[in-house]
Length: 336
Ligand code: SF4
Ligand code: MG
Image (cartoon, rainbow, N blue to C red):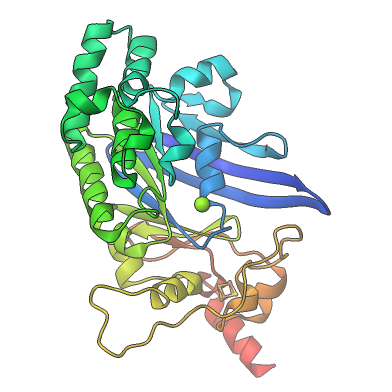
């Protein structure tokens, strides 16, 4: 499969009182054509910041990309002018946020907001754009599209706004859709409907999707591959089967134990991960998970591990336990 997005050695910081918060610290990943990947992790792990940097929507200042590249269909997005970037946004990459009210314009009708991009980016006539907008409203499951077309966001329910935002994000047939906690604010039934809708669109149009979430249940249904982030770094990657059936990083294992599963055996308690994420104002020198890891060894304190390959399927884990010499190191540590 061809890669459509490649993020390499991305570092993003925020200027804060007291110094520089290193929110993203050397992130690498790629998204292939037509695949759905999930980026999971606790809040503060750097997921949203990474997504916003792809869209170049980070508030700057106080945030800035220190290093790295984001190559989308052959171009480094970090090097485009704001004008070039405007045409990438909406036309080639669509974004769906957690709260539709932050991205819908309350003073414009839904119809206007869907047709705007079609007219501006695709040179559609007003009439053609309207026809396409009605089609999109129907596609995302909004009843009575003719009436809804001329209404304002405030007369839509939360679930309907989310659907309208998906319609806008899809209006120009983007090659990549980034959805940041798209259903968190919605009730469970509507969540499921929205996710099914996105899955359906992915299959139908071959859109690549990056889903950012802390809900592993959604990931299991929806995604092909999973990227686990912790403390501003990628700590594990794999297919969803790898991640669910054989997680290799202690943090991923903790995350899975702390979340309810559909097949949760009755009476089996959820186990929260003890402790708090690292302070990224002064990032740890060694493994970022060290202070919370019950498998930590001496080497973990001072030395940051690389993402190491695990098994044959391309799974990787950023953990010394997977270093070829780990057994000896553990033995040494135990002897001490
Ligand atoms: Fe735990 Fe060490 Fe692996 Fe970090 S590198 S997750 S501290 S075992
Ligand atoms: Mg977030």
